[in-house]
Amino acid sequence: MNSPAARAIRAVLVDDEDLARQVLREFLSAHSEIEIVAECANGFEAVKAVAEHKPDLVFLDIQMPKLDGFEVLELIGPGPAVIFVTAYDTFAIRAFEVHAVDYLLKPIGAQRFEAALERAKQRLAGRLPSAALPAIELAAAARPPQQYLDRIPVRDGTSVFIIPVAKLDYAEAQDDYVALAAEGKKHLKQQTIASLETALDPSRFLRIHRSYIVNLERVAKIEPYGKDSYVAVLHSGARLPVSRAGHTRLRQFLDR
Image (cartoon, rainbow, N blue to C red):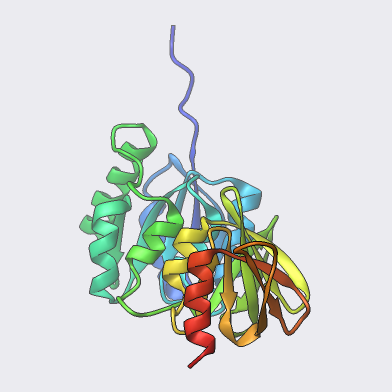
């Protein structure tokens, strides 16, 4: 009895250059087992396409407008295997070698493409281990030291919102998520507060409680709240709990 035909590998191509997508299409045309379900010219399109099509494999450019490859990686989560495509950035490549399926340097050579595709197939077949780090931590590992976030991308279904860090009032831990308060609204992002803390500039943001990070520019005053406890009152009127250790750190900043 013949075994049923193997299911096609569904792929999404993400690159802001049409020529680069064309090269990938040509290489993939020799592989009847690969079905290209979407092509995307920017990161917003990529997040939407991955949410809608649930691909097995994503070819992901790094340098793109609107959302870069790091931010897309954070937002699409651990589902598909990812082959990164980049013209440079050796620092990022070192992280990719450890944690990703593979990477392709532009201009892409046929032999190198075939090797990366074979690795992706092995990953999808379970013969290669999955990424050692969650996507959010991989993106952090690829960021150069002392380069802090200047914006935070947040996914809501197939939509993506960009929160400029300068407009962030505070972040609140909610299990494996953080609630980001900015401009009178809250957005949920799947990320631990500890990983967010390391990505924010410590001269501008402070962990005042195990569940709260505050933008120091938003703090109007500190008030006592019961015995040995305090609250930080923000200019917006929000009141955030402050731990004893957080109070000491916050007092040092405010007394400068």
